[in-house]
Length: 161
Ligand SMILES: [Fe+2]
Image (cartoon, rainbow, N blue to C red):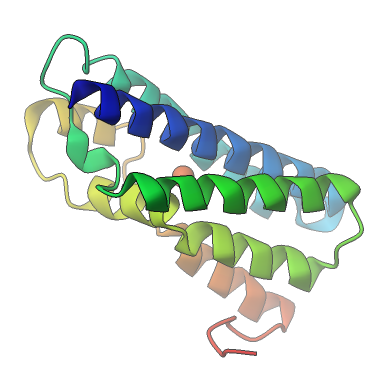
């Protein structure tokens, strides 16, 4: 049981690190939007640190399993999604709109979405509320990206294409 949980944490931690890398890369690919992408990268770094700290509890018991999704398969799917997105980003030939759509896919993924919801619902659970202080009042990334897309004149990204 603990082995599976630590495997889940391991993959989710990797997902957060890759997402941060992607946003950092987008921040240098689109200098005019570097503060937007840079702030998402910073936030993903915080997610990375939160999971890293939480994973440290696994061996000592009391692992906050609610921070990671139940399904290992869905965690694996997210890992694949962000890995592909990272490859795409490294090639560098994507438009600002494509970058936004990619970011929406990342933020809609099981791992990213799960952690943001979990962090917003932690309430006053001792250890978790302490972790939550790392990100006091964060707006969901998906909403930040949609607001950004609207400001860029791309629409909200809500419509299916
Ligand atoms: Fe994240």
